Image (cartoon, rainbow, N blue to C red; front, top):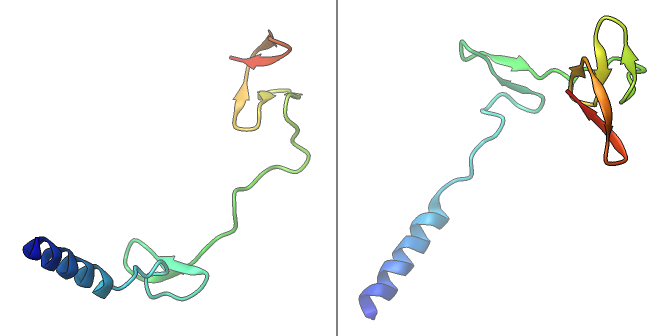
Length: 83
């Protein structure tokens, strides 16, 4: 029992001594490491075209379902199904 308690205490001490990971990789707020290791600024979020609405047909593209364009849609269980 004593050996198990000492092993648990040693494991707890080892885990508490580990430093947390640095998410910014040393580049500061709003930057990250690039392919060559240099700091590069972060870009904005995903780009969404203004006025794009879910379930609307766009000529040359198809129906937009919120993630991608589909060529066809049909009624299914009270809603729309895209394929």
